[in-house]
Length: 232
Image (cartoon, rainbow, N blue to C red):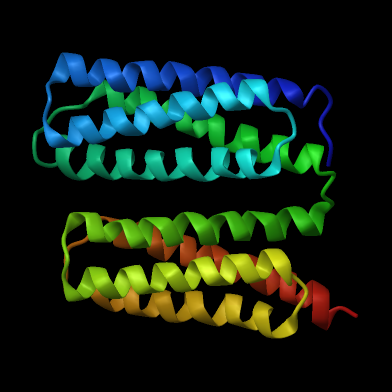
């Protein structure tokens, strides 16, 4: 699929990321200099750099890939904070987070469509690329659990994150290898089962996200596997 005027998606994403960067820093000034607000400002600063680079460089694969991954992770962290802390604990809505979520929701699919347009991917490759993106996103959020504390659960979660990164890299480089495709189905199933068990014994607002992503990856990779190996 190739969209007409798909360069507009890059421009829109770049401008929105710069706007989000400004409000991330503005949040630090208005709300206060607490640790989580400082972290948000740092994230926002990187949004600004990413936005500027997207406006400068056209059809850059690594840059666009980062542009898909990074805002998705930032949006996920923001959504978890909004629901589990701002609303559940404080009983308030942080409108800065809401605005940043809106930006992320627009930027991520825009850059995804931009990527598959300038690379000329067909439908099957688009589906596979989507799962690779999902592997990297959930992997990095798995690893970021160490930010919330060093304990056995978070270490185990981070280990799964590194495994997911490995699978994502293998799919990118050896996408039609049968063993790798089986691995890309089996590992998320195992991860999902472990996550489901932990869900009943521990509180972690990210577990639901991990479970949803695992289910989506397994479903999509099974479809891809059938196309490659069972429909021939």
